[in-house]
Length: 333
Image 1 (tube, helix red, strand yellow):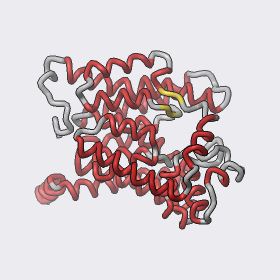
Image 2: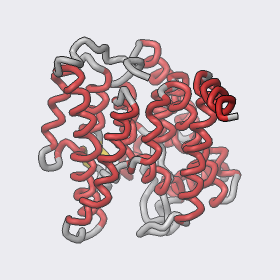
Image 3: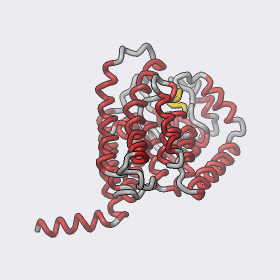
Image 4: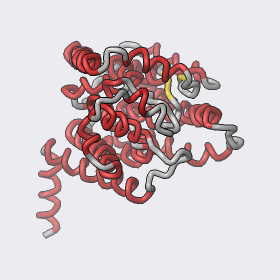
C-alpha cells in the first residue's frame, strides 16, 4: 500500500500540470485562510485591492475613478494607472468581500500553479513574508510574479508599472519582452479610449505619494549595485530593478526576488530571511506616521528581502562551485 502511494506521488510530481494544480491548491488555501482569518485589518480599514474595486465600479458607472475615489472618503487617492482598473473590471460586478476573495485567492492560486508547473522547488516561498503580506494586503505581486513564470501573461505588467520595470529587466527572451511591451501598449490604448486624461490625473495622484521611495535610497541600499557585477544574469537585473523602483517597502513588492532561487534550499533561505524580518522590525522605534513606517519597513525589506537573494546570485557567479552554472531557470529542479 505504501509503495502504491509513493508511486502515485512520484507520478503526480512528474507531470507539470498536476504539479501546478497541487501547488495552486496549497497557495490558494494559505491565502484563503489569511483572507478569512484576518478580516483585512489595517490602520485604514481598507486594503490595496479596495482601490481597484472602487475604480472598477466607477468605470462601470461611467465615472472617473480618480475623482470618485479622491472624494469618497477613501483614505488614499487612486494610485494605480487606469490600465489596472480596466483589468479589474470584472471585480466591480461582485460585492467587495467576494471581490477580495477572488482577487487574493485567485492570484495566489495562479502563482502557485506557475510555481508548481515551472519551478516546483520554489514552494517554500508560500511561507515567506512577501507572499503572506501580499495576501493580507490584497496586492498584485503574486499575479505579476506568476506572469514572470508564465510569460504569456506578461501583458498584465501594465497594471503596476513599477513591477513592470522589474519584469522587463528580467525578461529572458525578446519574445517575453515583446509580450510585456505589446500587451501593455494594448491596455494603454484601451484605457485612453475610456479616459484620455487619466495619465495626468494619475500623475497628480502620485505627486503627493511621498511614501513611494526606492529601497536603494535606504541606509546601505547602494549594496544592491553589486548586481551590476552580474548584469548579464536576468536574476541580477531583476534584483537591481526591485531596488530602484519606487515602492512602499512593505515587502510585497519583494516577492519576485524569490525567483532567483535554483533549489529548494535556496528558496527556503530566502523565505526564512523574510520571516526573520517579522522579528527584527520590532526593534525599530515606533513610527511617526505612515510615511515613517514605510521608510523603516523598507530598510528591513531591503536587507532581508533583497540582499539574501543578491548574495545567492553573487555566489552563483563567483564561487568556484557555481561559476560554470548557467543563470537560467532550469539550473536545478
